[in-house]
Picture 1 (spheres, one colour):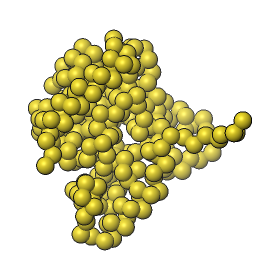
Picture 2 (tube, rainbow, N blue to C red; picture 1 turned 180 degrees about the horizontal axis):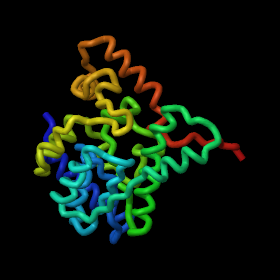
Picture 3 (tube, rainbow, N blue to C red; picture 1 turned 135 degrees about the horizontal axis):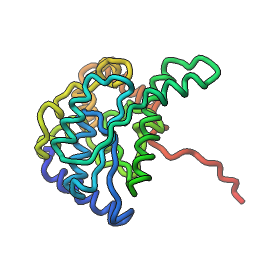
Picture 4 (cartoon, rainbow, N blue to C red; picture 1 turned 90 degrees about the horizontal axis):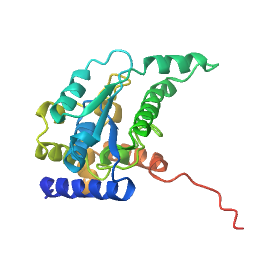
Length: 241
């Protein structure tokens, strides 16, 4: 049985220990999308460090229909935040590249520019960047390499979607943030539409190895194998000198 309160308390303590070892006076800086993951990570950092040491960065690309959810979070937590629209940066880079980018390249450009933006804010504010990925997404590679997949510390990368939600409830976050249907913010589709299976199936499979739908099992296994490289350090040549 998952003990959300215990795990929450352990994670808060872990965040404090990370900052004690890697910057006692540093701030936690993270991108805020308005979804459950960034909401939970932000709330964990507030409990660990205090709201004055947490900075949220909201990064719409043009118009963001659900930016009100991100604003709800920063208001709920009472944290400093910045709204930085990345549309000009994305459009400018696409314009300067001397060939037509693939659709996937264009989609992944946004999270990579967002992460550059978060790091720019973080470096200016003596910060450490919080990664907001969860175990379920990481397991099947549902993140952008050198985009939302990176950070200086990661509170939730060993927690499934269901577990992150449980921690969000313990933290007292508004239900609308915890239960918001996750969308990728790029294609307009839900995460589950893009993945081809539900998070509940995936979470159960990760924790128990059990899954009823063999087609979904094969798809999960395939995605996991194909995307393992995202979870590993960059291979480097050893000259054996």
